[in-house]
Amino acid sequence: MNHDYQQIIRQHCRPLSPLPTAISKRLVRLPDVRAVVFDVYGTLIISSSGDVGANVDAAKVTAVQDALSSMKIPWPTSSEECFQQYIGMIKQHQTRAREDGIEFPEVNIVSVWQQLLSGAGFTGVDWKRLALEYEVRANGTWQMPGLIRCLEQLREAGQHLGIISNAQFFTLELFPSLLGETVDELGFHEELQFYSYRYGHAKPGATLYVMAAQALERHGILPRQTLYVGNDMLNDILPARSVGFQTALFAGDRRSLRLREDDSRVAGVVPDVVITELMDIVDCV
Image (cartoon, rainbow, N blue to C red; front, top):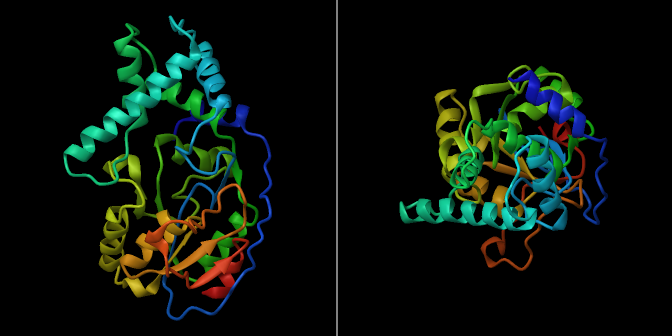
């Protein structure tokens, strides 16, 4: 936990409300659930871009320019060219990882920034701060309504809480910045948190889900006793089902809801429940 990073996040965060979707909730009582595992972006946290690492637009070019200016880094060419080099560097890291056999690789975004700026002759930069300065400008975040109450009631019911998320180091700083408590203090078990940047594997790959299932079994919890909650049919529901988890599609925010109706990989995939607000989970477990 870094208080300087949290201050940066708070300076740039503005209240966001979820945008309604046309999806209706579908709730049933799920049998024998002992653990609830969540996605972060678009589920626990409202994300203005829908998801970390989502497709970019002109505003993100401006975010690069402003992030560099905040760090007093005089980039020698245009911010648009810097941004294109940044995207290219991410693709290079992903390509190397695929060559090493990782089907869905995750980059460590701090390493990307470090390589990009070091190649341009910049040294002595706080790479983590630069990554954060860009992220807070490129992707506004806020807590999803009902989050605290939902977690409180799940904890009171004795549920084990976990996270599986495409994420970077700054994802962990969002919780104390927006909610005043770390993920551990909110009740997420330390051994049940799986963030893509730590392992080099991203969703929709099943690697993080397999690791979570193994960790849960060490706590005596079977995959069928686990409910996974996420907003993306491909990244969340499909891989969660593949390891035997029960699934809840969070359809509470139009920004982040990903039905993937044109993707054959999710054809015939049906979540066990569909929720439109986080408190719906309590009614299901």
